[in-house]
Image 1: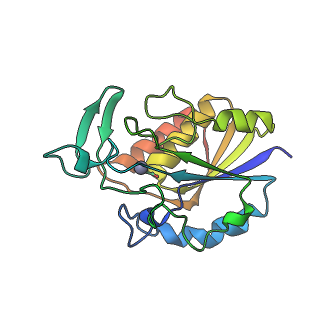
Image 2: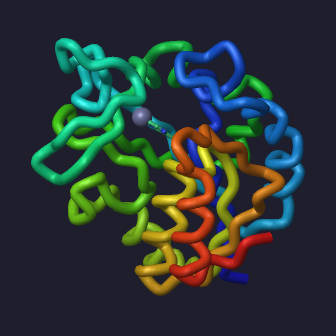
Amino acid sequence: MTKALIVIDVQNDFCPGGALAVAGGDEIVPGINALMQEFEAVILTQDWHPLGHSSFASSHPGKNPLEMTQMPYGPQVLWPDHCIQGSEGAAFHPGLNTDRADVIMRKGYNPLIDSYSAFFENDHETPTGLHGYLQTRRLTVLTLVGLATDFCVNYSAVDAAKLGYQVELRTDLCRAIDFDGSLSAAMKGMRDAGVGIL
Ligand code: VGL
Ligand code: ZN
């Protein structure tokens, strides 16, 4: 067995009532818990930003959430403050079976670079360490679920496929932010990268 389940950012701030709520984000929790039982390895990711993170609109005077800005590493969507390290919003959804996790991979802690992907920061070159972890455990087949389909799940799935993993996305266990065509662009990008869409 070499299969790992990667659960992306099932955190309070991405669920209804949270700072960056994804519609139906909480609905996927029971299905994810059940799916964990079918995997040799379970990895959870956690969006984990310091106060005043550069991806927050509040850090850019005159900018509003969902506007774009230019970062040294390229264009960046600006977000409401979310997933502040140690806050209730950054905690996992209380229904998520976190006991089953072998490892919790945090990302987005670099104040100057956002990190949608579980593998690389948004400069596309600074590694999070997840690739090394999976390699040393010989985990080569990945199923991805979680939040949000069009951002962190999408970037993680595409990076995983580029790194040579066999990647499947369980769309029934993902939910999207979907603004400005982001979901359809993400689905096309994942298909083009060779991600299996279930
Ligand atoms: C995410 C926007 C900002 C995500 C994280 O988990 O999809 N989206 N930070
Ligand atoms: Zn974030």
